[in-house]
Structure formats: structure tokens, C-alpha cells
Length: 101
Image (cartoon, rainbow, N blue to C red):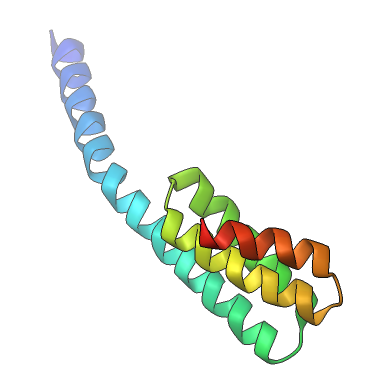
């Protein structure tokens, strides 16, 4: 009987944690996208194109996973700027056109 009560209590606690972690986890990941986008923008303005590309691609992956089109577009816009600055117009065109859709 005692084990059954403990198991029920543990199951209820786990369900509560899951309910709390869903939206909270999503908001943390959204904050991470914003931070990565900002870091990428700073690196772009400091002409550290490799770091900018890394930050922005990470942000883009998370934004796609979470299906947040606004942040996807922002990351793609900045990735297009990075591509332009590094002399890759075909890649820039791809990112910039996707950022508008």
C-alpha cells in the first residue's frame, strides 16, 4: 500500500513538472533565438562573419524547430547580409528571398 501511494504521488509530481516545463521551455528557447540573433548581428557589425554565421544558423535552426516564422525571417535576413559581406551573392539571394516569404 505504501509503495502504491508513493508511486501515485511520484506520477502526479511528474505530470505537474511536465505541464510547467512545456511553455516555460518554449519561452526559454525563444529567448535563446533572440540572443543568438543579437549576437549574430553584433558579430556582423564587428566584421566577424564566421561568428555571425554560426550564431545566426543556430538561431535559425531553433526558430524552425519551434515554427516561429518571424525569427526565422530575421535570422535569414541577417544571414543574407553576412553572405553579401563575404562575397557570396547566390547564397545571399537565397537567404534574403526566404526572409521575405
